[in-house]
Image (cartoon, rainbow, N blue to C red):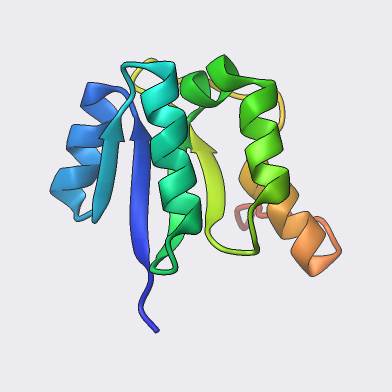
Length: 112
C-alpha cells in the first residue's frame, strides 16, 4: 500500500511541502480547526506520515500529546522546524530511531 504525507504548519512551510508533493496540507490559523484536521489525518487510513511544525505542536501542548497517545501506529508524526529554524531540545527522529532500533546510531565523517 502506498501512504500519503500530510503537513500542518505556517503558510511558508505548507507552500514548500505542497510544491514538493505533499498530498495533504493544512495552514494553521485557528486552534480548533487545526485540531479537527489533525484528528482527520490520524483517522485516515491512507496517511502514513504527518509532519507538524514545532511551534504548532507546542501551541497545542497537552491536547497534542493526548492525540498522539490515542492514535494508532500510523501515521507516524514528526515535528519539523518552521521557517525560523527552531531547534528542539529533543530530536524527535533520533528518539524514534533509538526506540525502534534499540541503540543510538552515530554518524561521523571519515578521517575524524
